[in-house]
Length: 305
Image 1: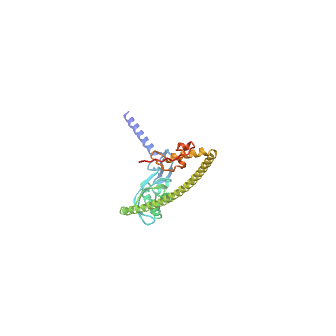
Image 2: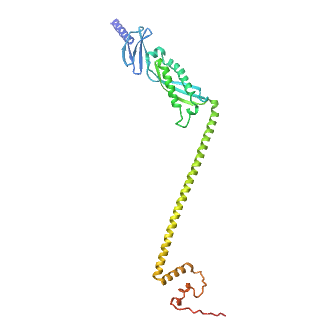
Image 3: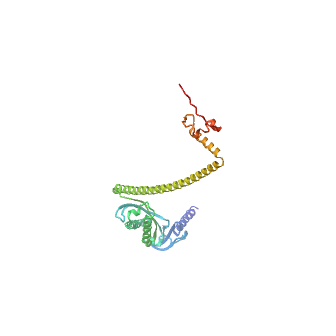
């Protein structure tokens, strides 16, 4: 019984070993290349369970088909206007042909080595054709950095395609100047921004003067029109007043004279007024009761000792 149990366990272990040597599983995130004595004989791209000849007759090499990220270390380049700049970039890439990748590159570490040379050279060539003022600018219409990186990606993808992988994207993490040049560069940038600010202030002052001049001219026109309208209204009012006075005078001359005389009294006579007038003055006509009754006042002479 003991020997039978040992034999059964040995047979089961051999079965598991045979299964592991014959069958293999492919995940959705990888491709598999079956090699026979080191030579590729089959490529499996769909996920599932597959069979092969046991090792050492056939082996399986699995290659990830996920997007990989390669980081280019800080590297110094020259711009189109011969200015030193330091760029730190990264590139994303993925395997497009597992068989070609296995033959030419073998693994992900070797792919990073090839990408280092390709990305470095393409970024240097692209940045060397564009002035620094077009790479870093506040004017969206002049910036050339996105187009430059797109060119780098296209050229890098064309160079990596024969190796079985392609570059998906290239972007910059940082674009700066060498440490020795930072002080002078920042000073020049401040001077340029101050010149731009002075230009904006000068243009603003000129525009403000134009607006004020236009407003003053418009104000003068409005005031002239208003004064003319007021003068016309006063003229019409004076004409109406003269007409009304003439009509009133024509209806009852004595009453008109009486009312106008009373208005005159109200304008120049108050408690502190002293009048010295001749006895036959028209103003005294309604102040003297005898004159108001139609009698003639007889002057009196008062003699004081």
